[in-house]
Image (cartoon, rainbow, N blue to C red; front, side):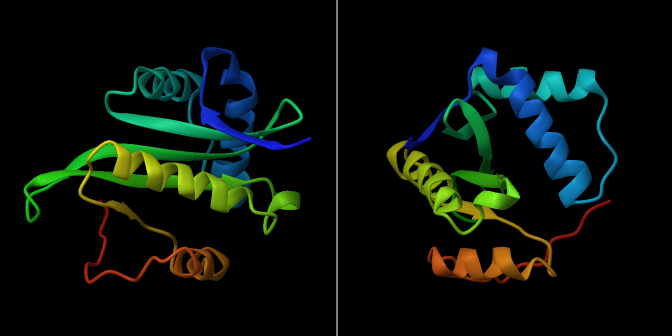
Length: 147
């Protein structure tokens, strides 16, 4: 069966929540967020005002997701998207699912008049860095900080 890339729908919540927990807890080794916060994020993204989420579905199973948040760039005096997440289940990495999700984010950015799409990845995530370079991305000039 073929791969389908689409926007999330209300009925995706349970499957997507499980996949997001794999991403958060297993992949990034972070604590699982409270259910209420995860559900609030899901609902916010369904509204498509602050961001949008794409899922990859194969045989009625969600196998990956990508999240875009909407923001602005003062230096460009324009709106931008930030791809905050790109995750594919381990057994399908390298199969083209990530490329399709990335392309959906890139297409959305261009089709909706955003100046550019930005993203970050962990410095030690070498597989992701190679993937982003293959997709045409380049390492930016800015350093990211958090508090």
